[in-house]
Image (cartoon, rainbow, N blue to C red; front, side, top):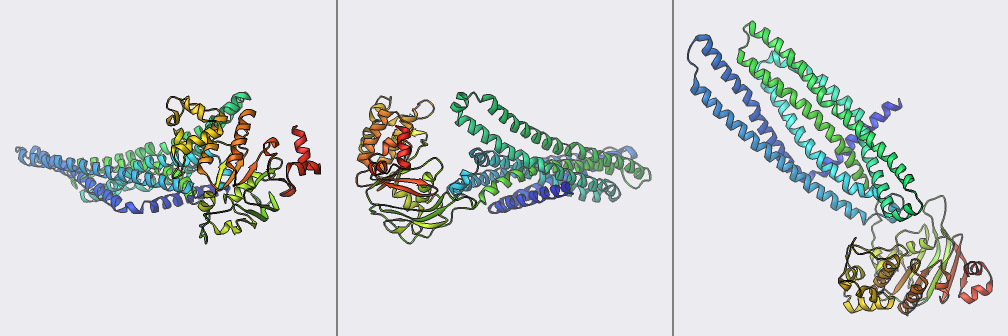
Length: 589
């Protein structure tokens, strides 16, 4: 019962995925219909050929039977016609393939464009709950699989169907008795294809799923290679890779093996029909009901007839890969996006007052990370958030930046709820330096002025001098025009300094520093601290740091516990209270 239900689900998934993909191809229907017409006309030319060959056979048979000369002129004319038919069929077949390739490339480009646009519309929680490698696999492997398999499947399927229909018509025209004998094999072949499709579809789905998992493991291992080597975890990582790789190998083997059975099975069925036609055709000829030319034509037709059966079976096998890959792509494209915003206000010249008012938030319904968090940050203040790991410091930043929406409560900037502001407007108001650095392949200059308009070269140099990065950059061969790629290696601290310089050039009225000095040494930390103090003048700064020495000069320190503010005040005030902050500080010094 369970197995039957699984088969039905697989069949439904195949139909559903192919339905979505066919709908996706709607803009290219005209091109695809043109390709179908070319396939039909080209097939018609090829189908007429055996009938003409039968005419040549009858001409020769009559000449032999009557003892007269063979009509070479008529044979010559038929031969010229056959050459023209074959040339025309080849041209139309090429045009059909060219059009389908054009459709595949256009649709693949459109699909990649939509996926890339979708990446920027998905909420942060989507990426927090899924491995990056699986998402990358949908963009690359799955789209490529769709393009390759659909190109193969469409050409084979349309050629096979038109050839099958055309050969059936010509068989009935040539000899209806032999046509009925040949058609007996069709229900048998159709049943075999249907059974194999139901059986093999689950393996095609598993194949694409496990390919995504494998990409995830490779991505994680590559990005964390230093950690893997440090902990001598190569065998463990390889074991995990081998496990998924073996599953992928088995799924690919089973899917290709089962689908590969289609061709020999259809050829076997076709050969049975071929034998039956030869026997019945011989009996009809002996009874004088048909000429020898008809048998010759029919032998060719029966070969043509069995060929599309195998071709269609192969095309259906390719379509299963198309369906499995497109199912994953459309699953991604149909993910719930961030709600569309209709901001009522636009903030440009802000003072920098930030208010958290009874904020409740949880990543799931079972546990709240913030439970009634309330805090008021005045313009120009440097406010530090102190709490154990997992207490909600980074969550506050994510809510402030509108990466997530609060469950209840409100966050205001200068008295205006961020719910009334667009995400783009909110992001424009903040400069961010995160613990995890990020750089792209490009020059150092381009990395620093990333998407910051009207920034001059002097602004970039000034920012780098303030963070202590200018001297290092000038030692590089091309200075600020040095291209960052695999040949230029920056240390973790230098990468962090680069991101800090980027935030300085951005020159937003408010700053968020999330463990900004965690990857640098003590001396560099002091340089950055001085630069940050200068940068933070007349700006509101929110600092998250485990090194409490970096926040001693903060105007306000908020100690968070159980999703609420447990203590607040300056460093001296909190040390005098001898509470949680004093305990944390004394544990470090």
